[in-house]
Length: 274
Image: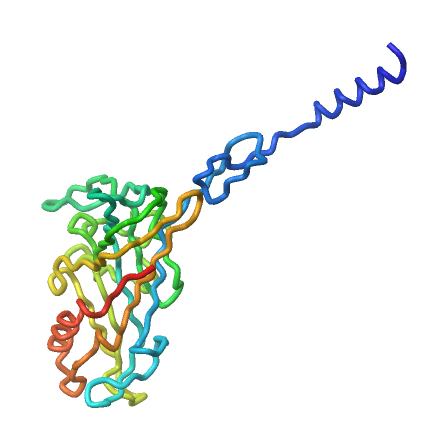
């Protein structure tokens, strides 16, 4: 072998020895698909995203702001938070859900036993921010005729032990937690309001549990299209607080009457679009 041939062979050997395969996702349905990869790994899949657009009539809702209610009377909405869960999308007569699951510890329906239970992990705690809320992995594409989801939690999820839920999970105790203990369970929706515009007036906390809301579902029949091939599926939930607090008489100071009126208003509060 000539010296030149030996050098070329040596160079080829060195280049082969130094080659490191590129690791990336080779699944075309993933959001991070990379056709140039040599080894498949680290795939991330499309999410069902729910953008929560919170308004007061035509105005953007701003926490701790004054709004005109019944008879033009000013009141302050300091904060509103609520749970969503049990997301279902309907396609050709079938029901599709997110693919995420989570194992959670729950109290038994009776007695003191602790039970390990697997849930579809589509729990969302909606606050003022973030606007974009991740519901879970959602890969099926095509057109869906209807979406349906729960305001609040199922009876089984109500029994989750929040201290044993994963860190940062929506059912974990939060800084603004709406879990009131084993007997009271989770609050489905909470509104903190001030009945007038006076700086000295103390706020009232209106907490709605299953007893006030029962099984309340938000649904919309329309054409919802999810483009396959690694695209997120983004829907918009519009929440109108003018409709939520419509005709609430803040002069009475009767919290139970306020809550009853708000519960009656709820079917007109939420709308879903794409």
